[in-house]
Amino acid sequence: MFLGIDLGTSELKTLLLDAQHRIKAQASAALTLQQPQPLWSEQQPQAWWAALDAALLQLKAQQPQAMAAVQAIGLAGQMHGAVVLGAQGEVLRPAILWNDGRSGAQCAALEAMQPLTQEITGNLAMPGFTAPKLLWLREHEPRLFDQVSRVLLPKDWLRLQLTGEAVSEMSDASGTLWLDVAARRWSAAMLAACGLDESHMPRLVEGSDCSGTLKREWAQRWGLPNAVPVAGGGGDNAASAVGMGAVAPGQGFVSLGTSGVVFLCGARFSPNPARAVHAFCHALPRQWHQMSVMLSAASALQWAARLLAVSNVGEMLAATQDLTLAQCAAAPIFLPYLNGERTPHNDPHATGSLHGLTAAHGPADVAHAVMEGVCFGLADGWQALGAARAGVPALSLVGGGARSARWAQWLASALGVSLTTHDGGAAGAALGAARLAWLSVGGSVAQAAPALPVRQRFDPDPHLASALAVRHARFQRLYAAP
Image 1 (cartoon, rainbow, N blue to C red):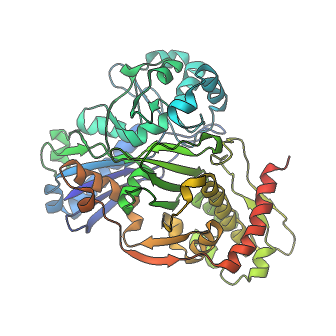
Image 2 (image 1 turned 180 degrees about the vertical axis):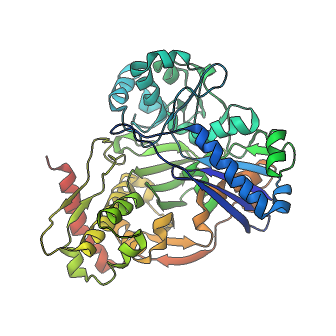
Image 3 (image 1 turned 45 degrees about the vertical axis):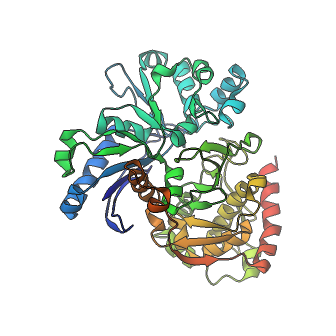
């Protein structure tokens, strides 16, 4: 039995996986987001621990025998967040999260201080990354910055509580802007630019390596064996890839979660910072990946549901089913930049809009426009991946949006690539974390991380793709308009 833990933004998920790839049980606990000022996004690390404790107590109550048979634990989680600790390991302030946009000025300052930033890290400095957050702290909270003894990513703070070990792994560390991504080690130059050095950093392992063992007190509380190994794990998207079986070059997925992601595995480090593409280490040794990221995907549909006073996203999407292609072509154009944007614009100040509204438009038209706008944002990211897209026959589709067949069909047509949904795909990063746990105790990739069974395939519709191309061109012109 293998335990996967995924620390998300809105909830923490846990999962028990057996050696026949059956999910024995799942449990989760909700998390809340604090946004004390515009562009700010924070959470209290102690809330993550309370959520983990609640979820694991649920699993103990549901499956005590399975919990007692756990051989290893894997961790996955939201990337880029800055958890700053004092000399005694105490949390000095709320964690600044991946979707926090306050450090735009510090991004420019970082690249000015270290002109080789893009060469070393393979990425543009963006407010979502960890390093600019520390520069912001140094400028705006200098007394607190002077107390910082260590900086950890969110899932790695959980690891510290679980094992007593300050450890990270390559995929999550890639999103800090402190990692030499090609060499898979901390960069002294990037750390120095932020007033830090390697003593502030956790030890690095591969995602499939053991990072430490569970403390006895927690094993007893949750009904787990003593000294259970805890794998390095992965950032949420790299772990999701392992969960989907995207573990070889040319394999990848599209995620329709809170944010939107297009993920492609590669055998080598292939940076493309000019298009705001992320080039990170995979959670597996000697592998890398490219990733385009949009900040508002399924969350844009949730926003629209609140705007339209609809009870849920599914009901809102159902309202679009009866729209004809002609009605869709006359719908407003939606720019989905409700929280700024990463790929391809790297613009934390980008804003959303509905363009072309008339009195003839109703809720279904607006709902369709939002769905379509997210498709176009992901298509921009897919195009930004450039040559890496060549020869990719299909991508897996994961995330809450994958439940909508209509959205999947429109997205496949907008991207121009087939999309497949999978049995077990909803388990996402928690499943990947469990698989990485399996690898950490001797499992092979073929044994522990096979592709999931295909549930449904969505091929691009040429007629729909042609109609979407016209509207996509309008969409792109609207972002560029003054």
